[in-house]
Image (cartoon, rainbow, N blue to C red; front, side):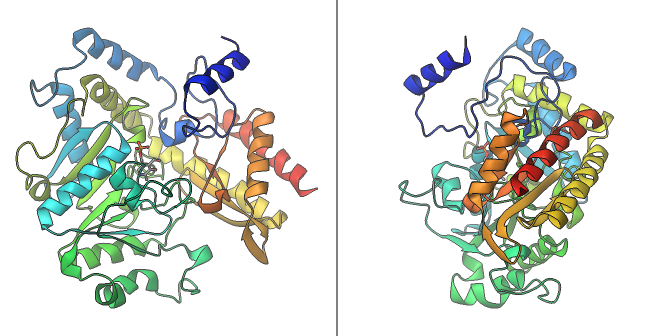
Length: 423
Ligand SMILES: Cc1ncc(COP(=O)(O)O)c(C=O)c1O
């Protein structure tokens, strides 16, 4: 079907709330086609042969049974694989669901049940999903929350370690991460008692909120607060997971083990699969039937997930993420030096961004320019995405199987567009 006809058909049949920033369409893809990787889903690229084979083999056997009716090997094997990846000293257990939001929902449910506490502490600029519970944990109001009331009660929010725009007007490192200390020193007195908080949920690098990379010690400080107060630490690695940041999981830069790890996106190379991996004592606290679902951990998705795990290891994609990130950050830093509208550049592994501002001395978010850069890149053949409150961040999220030639080609387009916009 021709693109114009498809656009018209979409307008007639799909609600406009299911939005699309750029008018791109796809017929077929293999490997790498853009700098967005399906929003962080395609760490192993589009349709790798090994994943395709695993899907085909599994689909030829059976598509569904419901894991709660007849158990099957791909689910159990992938759970074991996840547990081995995460466990350093504590035995872990894993369950699977259909999406990132559903994984967050279940992680929070389990933490509440384990602690018998109602409160959840989350962060400014956090994104945890669009369902009723996860929308409550998500920070950005428009267009994610406004009009979709009421929100889940007992959700509390504090500033994240967003050093470029510190909520306390402090400077790192002299601040000594006051944003984390605030929780123990003030929050528990002024907002909610520690013994009413069941979980702190945090992204180790905030994704949708603007690729905000906190100082390395931040997560450790949060972990200590959790340990000292009997709170479950839930680490949401839906966007940062599976080699993206140069390690299998971003928390590995800061802590040994999370209490609960939430995954989705790149877990099954594009098939819908989310995971909740947590300390066995916490995961097993839930009574039979309290968690699960009809489709969760579908056998085809789990078979794809097992193939993804193999590719990540065999192709050493965590190391590759590091290499990609170094190259991209070098470019972004050069842009920052050269152009007054590049306020901040940040990154961990191959999760990198530029924050676009009015001017370095007046770092007002510049959504119009951000949009214009992204649109011009699109016109020149490069799809790259925005992120962050006020849409002020250009984010780089390529599949980790990208070749140097492909990476250079995309960066060249971006470089030319940046130069054009500076004129
Ligand atoms: C950190 C994080 N948590 C949760 C979600 C929600 O995942 P899903 O869109 O699969 O529901 C996302 C999606 O972008 C995410 O980046």
